[in-house]
Image 1 (cartoon, rainbow, N blue to C red):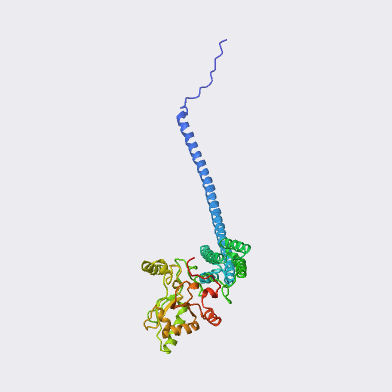
Image 2: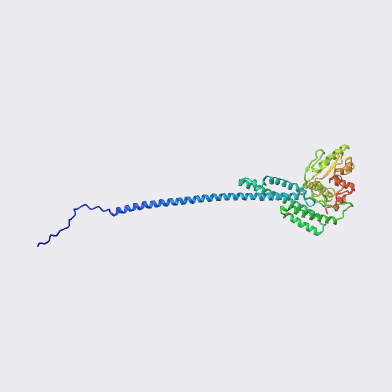
Length: 430
């Protein structure tokens, strides 16, 4: 038996095997896929981030706009509040100033009153113009703030005017206190306390401050008056300390500040030789000139107002030629001359006795001695009056004191201002 034939499996026909991708090619493909996927992811992230940023910007813009609106509303509210506060303060200041201006009497400086009145009137106009309530304010915050500033400035202006007025009152009160040294110590101390309070006063309380001050002044005056015995029967005992008063007494023991210049200096228009006098003398001098002319007398003027410096020159000239003792008999030292008040006049009638004792015997001298009181003038340095007034006879020297005082002195037979006001005699500089 033969060996079985070994049957071999059929061998498939040979064919070309499928080519295999190289490893590097596969890696490139995978990389491209990853890059595309990553780019897509980044794009998505960018879009999301952009959306988030845009939302954040929008939110920031909205919040900024809201804050800006809030700030604008707050600024307007603050400006409006300033207007309301300043308007109320200004109204209160004007009311207080009106009350202060209504207070008069001793210890106050009347010359300072017009300045305070003018300041009050000016700021009252601002109050009327700018002091509207909030409902009348414009929408523009800047305009509201400007209105507030005007009102606040007006308050400051009136406060300064009040402070100046109180300072002037303090100066007058100090002079009065010095002149009334014979008052009781307790009332003088009370007045000094009120003087100290004047300069520290709240402008809103000026009326109350002045009321208390005036009461202290009156107490000092009353105490002083009670302590005085007039120098002559009928003397008033009143002492005028204000240099601008028409009744101020200036003599060898009562002087004027070196820098004092009287108010309202004016030169009479129709009197030959005229120089400056206080404006209050213009009308009386003119009427006197007319009435003297009707009597056939010419009114002339030799001298009137003299400054401190001018009096110093005149006095020193007499001292150089006559010595101090000789000069003092007929020439005032600078600061003690009535001519510095603007109320004294040296008069003449053109008949040859100008500034000479013989003037008392001329028609003009006699007429003035007999009639000048009707026009508010008095003969200041009469014959034999030197022990009281300090100067030898000067029939040409007349002093304006006003018709009321001149008439009262004439009717009561009182010759000198020292006697009329109960002042010590002033024969020398003491």
